[in-house]
Amino acid sequence: MQQIFNFVIRNKTFLLFLLLFSIALALTIQSHSYHRSKFINSANFLTGGVYGTMNSVDQYFDLKTKNDILAEENQRLREQLLNTNTSVDSTFIDSSTYATEKYRVTVADVYKNSYSSTNNYLTLNKGANDSIKRDFGVITSNGIIGIIDNTSKNYSRALSILNVKSKINAKIKSTNHIGSLTWNGKSPVYVQLEDVSQFAPVKVGDTIQTGGESSIFPKGIGIGTITSFESDISGDTYTIQVQLFNDMTNIGTVYILENVDRTEINLLEKSNNE
Amino acid sequence: MNSVVGLNIVRFILLLLVQVLICNQIDFLGYINPYIYIIFIFLFPIREERLALLLISFVLGMLVDLFSDSGGVHAAAAVSLAYIRPILLKSSFGMLYEHQSIKFSTTDIGSLITYISLGTLIHHSILFSLEIFNISSILLVLEKTLFSSIFTIILSVLIIILFSRNRK
Image 1 (tube, helix red, strand yellow):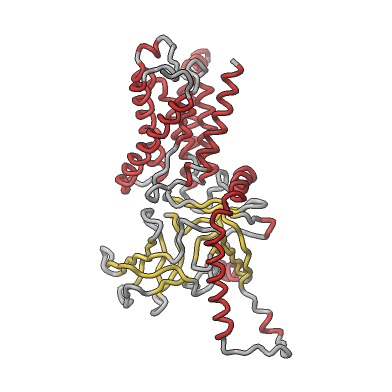
Image 2: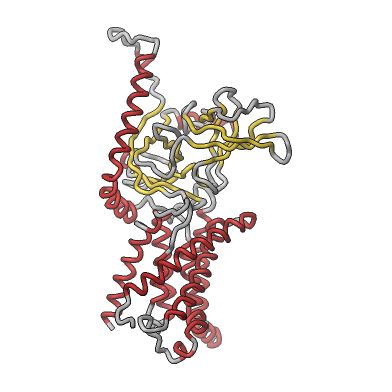
């Protein structure tokens, strides 16, 4: 017994180092597995508060660009509105057309955005109090940004598409061939669309959209354009380089999408799997 | 004694804030960031207990992790740096360390640069290998380590020189 105590006291520095290092290593490993990075994330009171103070100062610097983006989006929406064929008859109210609200949209400010690491996250200023939950989609007017993976009371954290853990269902707009969108950790301008069938007629310049197979994003949200593509080693599938519509290095305001039918869809899929 | 503790608390908070609010947002050439919070570990009083340094480094790394959503990579790297600091001190300052009489504000600049460069390289290589966590992208690890280290070393040396009084 005495000897054990002596050993501990003699090597106390090394033992403490070993303990702290293994705690850090354990946290690192569990942060590398999707959906389990619970303890250490920036969606909390402390970091949210600090980033919020910072944001309230530096949001003034790019008000002009934000205005331009908003005006552009307004123009696009107005065009869409004026060019829809179905004229809305204000006297006729059909309850079935109003009951089909599928997505609820919440607007949020980005408090923190990173793109230099291989696992990037965004911190947003809306949380559980604004009924934001895990697996809600995050988009801007240009295209998709990521998926909410952690929430606290007033803040939430989104897994950016610039994260090697991110995997999103996407398709080529013109041909409807699907693939999964991943990131190789290199450039914040390009993401990769993998597992696209060799039979798909891939053309440089085509648009990539969300596929609508998952219940997170609605169908047809823009992602980017094809800049190049190559066959896989096996020769069965293409890997396509996609240039993003969004400038991931400069994001101010985002929209969080909630699929109202999501729980129902998930329940159905679960019951099918059993 | 109290002024030393106060100085270190102020340094801790300032370096943490500068790190997460300014340095983490630089993204020079897309991915190069300096990690200057390790200056705290470099300049921690030498005569203090090593256990205290280990614990404080862990907390500092953890806080940086918290702000940058990186799991525990900064904590691991900071703790390792704190653990091997005596070896670094011995190899860069030699006899001065043996006599426990290093004053960072009066040592000659050559040893200081050696000390900081060695420490930064070790810290960054642990940091990036844990962050990327993939043997097959070892080139990316080395690339990030090299470029970020250069950035960190230059900034750290400049900051230490700027903020140390009585330099000849």
